[in-house]
Length: 171
Image (cartoon, rainbow, N blue to C red):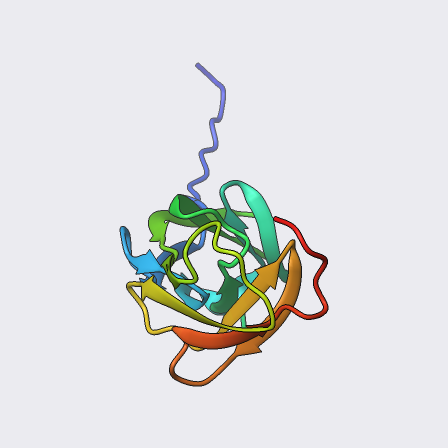
């Protein structure tokens, strides 16, 4: 009644969307070992300011400049079994997008064929082992009493000699 009402229309404000993150490789339930190249797809990548890679909830790598989409993941320090890999991408608006997957880290098994367990040895000893692995191995390091005695980087990895002359007698 006598009041002038003024109404204004404004277009709806578009909500800010979090970045989208997805794995290219590895894939869920992949069996992996050694150093693995992790590749992700991030959109929109031009708005990203930070990407973090986690393994079992522990931060392994953080990138604050491009390229963000790949990470060389060394699995050597992980126990065999299932592990969760998570990637978080933060954009210029502090929005976070993430993806995670579960992979299985595999480890080779080794069986000693020669010498026999508890066999007395001396001098130069031929060692023969059987290696079972899902992947082709490129290196074998062997230890006595937690001291690395040698490293083999060419085939065959299953046969090598150990010089025991510098070792103390005993078990």
